[in-house]
Amino acid sequence: MHYLPGIDRGTAVAQAADRNQALFLRRERAAFPALAAILAPRSIPSICSVPAPAATSCELPTAVTYVTFRNPPSAAEWFAEAHAKMPHKYLLKEFEDFARSANKAELLMQQMSQRIHMHIPRYNWVGFYLIDKKDPSTLLLGPHTGSFTPSPKISLDQGIAGSAVSFRRTMIVDDVSESADYIKVSDLVKSQISVPVIARARVVGVFNIESYFRATFKADVERNFAEACAKVVGKIMERTMAAEPTPTQAFAATHS
Image 1 (tube, rainbow, N blue to C red):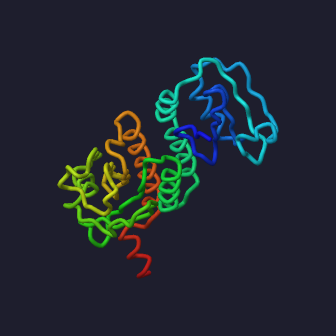
Image 2: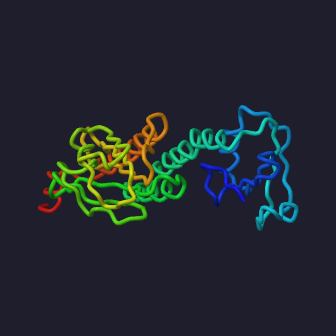
Image 3: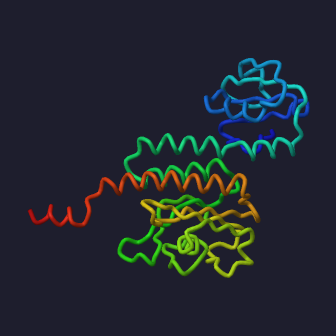
């Protein structure tokens, strides 16, 4: 059994029958746009549904879809194309849709953390730190998902996340062992990206992703994706802040 790199194993299963001549996919609505994006430049003469018994080597319990195409890509090509085209773009679209109806930024941040961690294998810790309202010089741990226990709070003059907030720009470290700013929380972490979350022209938090692989966060894919995610969160936080009463309004409400 060989899995197609870049596609969630629960969504798409690639069977290496006849050396990449065939691809078996579970019939999930999200699978086909993703597949089409990868195979668009190639000639696909046939797509047909077959019952599960005809694909016993795939060991799938339900009907699957059988795709045959000419000029099959190599394993390296599969990885490069899948990595470049998915799942980043589809996850971002999902987050943008979720944000339209979400009434709390925390819900979006939790959804974002869980989904990214689930669907992008090299993103081993995904989460947010938020500015402490009682102490603006401190970041407090927010919604997150990952395989190690993070620091519960970070000073703005410490760590890569603190630097992202202080300098109001994305910080990428390809090898954390060479960074004096890195706050060591796991021996497994090799690279990190931290993106400031901005709402109403001020930094309100930081979107943080850590990886067990060096140089994970490339500018043309990962950086753009992380910054776009931070912007989506920033917009919903602006909406939430607009709904909150100002200090003057709050004082008047409690003394009326």
